[in-house]
Image (cartoon, rainbow over all chains, first blue to last red; front, side, top):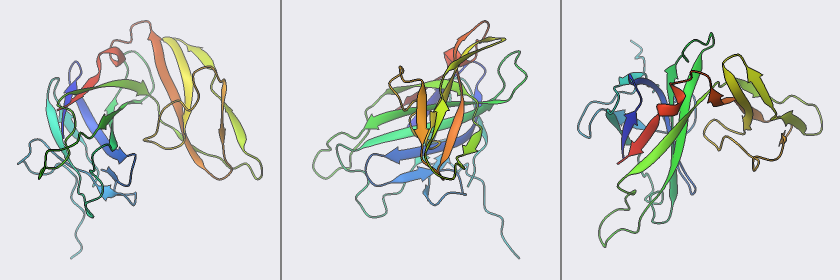
Length: 56
Length: 161
């Protein structure tokens, strides 16, 4: 799904959620139990979701 | 997996969701997309999030293909303040007022919603209150209805392609 933003001056996206009326909820919040909603600038682009900190 | 990225006016991004069991993107299902945007309303001292959500209905696919959303869907956004409040009443449900208040820069309507992504208004617009069960968490805030110079909130829209 491609989402186009129309807002004067642009905006900073801080969260996205997709919810179904059936089973299925996805979001960009790692604090929830939902499946991750991936976000990228283009269909083939790198994900914009923050990486998880890796332990050494 | 938090996100925090800028999108220019007219710019777009792509959202990906997995269908782990092959049951989530069936024809007839309605998917609701919600997005929050950081920002500050012109001339107002508080911090607000711009929030909007829109439901899209999955169309019946042709044989051998997956369901798809409508080609274009417009999403109107509201500028809302999103403090989260917890209901701690020890017994019966409580009633939260949804009355209107007049602020310096315009008239705002207080709203209540059960979860962050659910409908902003539970009532039909005439009920002056909402009911939350004991122990539940609600999201409350204020929606700008009419602003003196609130140029920001009236121009926001999303289009899902």
